[in-house]
Length: 376
Length: 154
Image 1 (cartoon, each protein chain N blue to C red):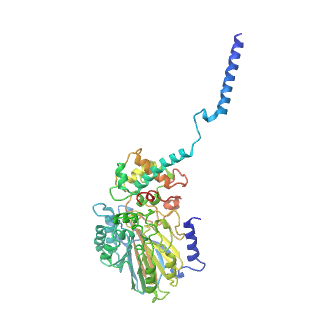
Image 2 (cartoon, rainbow over the protein chains, first blue to last red):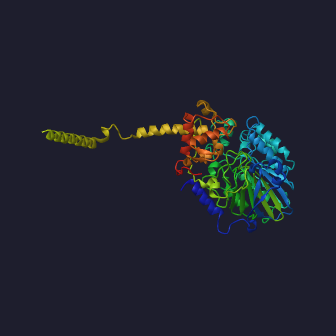
Image 3 (cartoon, helix red, strand yellow):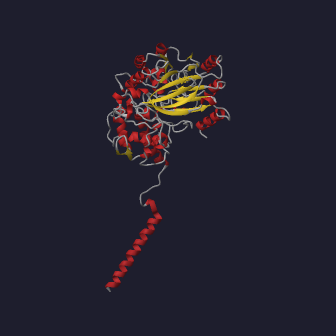
């Protein structure tokens, strides 16, 4: 049995025991409807379906005190404007659409990977572009934001990488799942740029299992949840999924067992995460987990480990830069949350037939080889 | 008399042919100059292939030094092939040749590589028979080793 299979079996044993599941009130229904911006903007952008964002929703039941909305934007991967304007244009579009939400969002969460190579210029560009969004903004970092200067510029712009606040009956938590990578750079005498380069390569082998919550942050999480009623809703934002999906691409946190231990007593936990650039849904223990789109580019599903509960998204057209990407609006309306994937290039977010999904073509893949040689 | 001579010549030719066949069967590959492959040869063949795979891996992951060395410009946007195709996933070399919708034509893997270089990466198309193309092809095929051939599949 491979190491991956071993971890997967262990996870199933720990997290998917008989009778252990999210609170039954967190049931899922799915709906499709036309986004309001689609109707109001039709006169100018109706020439192509690529500009018709139809929303697919996952409805979950909660007990928020008052209806409200918030927006999720992540994985913008900005280069300096002089090198790549395509990603800039997408952030501009997302920011305008978030700002145009009606009723307006109470806040916007940015879910990490604002920059591509962690440069000051890239982070400042992202910060500048998102000023278009007038509502409250909260940020968590991605690995691309961190490993050039170890989070220095990020901290100056956005403050602490983890935080919590209560809003209309829901406890929101922002987790930092990126800054605790095992040190792969000191012994190898890497420059900051080299360290960042390895971290920025999703399928690289040098940076290793960098995604994790860390004992100190788990203690903090336990502390900030201690006074919260165990049947009240908790929404946890993280860059990486809080379970094991595909470790070779850090589609996980390495300490998911400990995360589960802390969250186990709470019955209405929803984790919303970025990093995967794709539609994902999973239930593990008493927590549900929802993966969000990137604005930059979509990733195919990993060759194995895709949660069985995931309804796969469409296979994107590489010739359409707005296909397979977008942002999400989340509505909390009395007793339900609707998570809306706003995918710019599609009428339908979900694959309508097996051929519409990247999962229709089985793959057997090998990890890369060239970064196992060379100066390190 | 003439008929008897013709008969003897025919018998002699048949005998000669039979002898040559027997020698060929008995001596076999040595006479045909086909020595069994040696472990050293296998290693050498493998090394030639893996050298191309490694070069292709570096090109695929946007290594500037390798691109410069091979005199190619695969991207001008900062984008590299691997950013959309980690582990060369979703490249589907096993499905080519096929009708490629994004190109609206019947295409080979090399056509597709060049399309990606030109469109998403906004780089410079490369010679389909160039060393860089062969290296990229070697890496993509190697990464997908074990995937089942399904030529023509969408």
